[in-house]
Length: 279
Image (cartoon, rainbow, N blue to C red):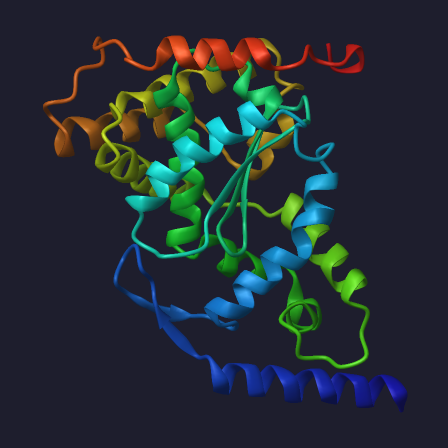
């Protein structure tokens, strides 16, 4: 009987949530789609789950200069994005190469991924791609698909008496494994190219980044296994990015040097060496 009552309550809250929110317009596409939580609830979800999420990747790297640098590049991308959110950009200390966006516009790149970058437009490409996931509502769609109503409702703050810490932890763990489809990755690349170009970065930084990732995976597949699991990458994805740039930004020159390459190299030199367990 108790389980039946709980199930009924979940369905009631789910129905209420659907009735209150319903469809929303996707800022990146202009199309209507189902959104089970409001923008403010999304922001709150990200804020509540961020500490637990960051802890999964050894927390934020304790270097104010590096953090300010990532935030500065990210702010340029955010200013060019299709969706207004309280974007925050941070560098995580984890050695495993990866990048993430969680609800509410919190965007992360790991030290393990930044070590492989050779110029600033590659960093702009990473951050632009993740902002693309935020703008196209891929994260919310994934949460709705994978996490189920109970966690979704708890995280949105609708269930009284549940542990806020427990809910945040559940969401954070779910976000670590949140997977995107190939079509979503193509779209995030397209949006990333759009935003980095608006921010006056050479869009070929996206192709450079994808080439680096694919080469890394071919050489050391285990090192990028986690990233490729959540962010699938194939040679076709690189070809798609190349085609977008050729069609939409024909003036872009892949041979043009990045004017901020030296600054990026100085930032990479500030990164601590990878731990021996990850070598």
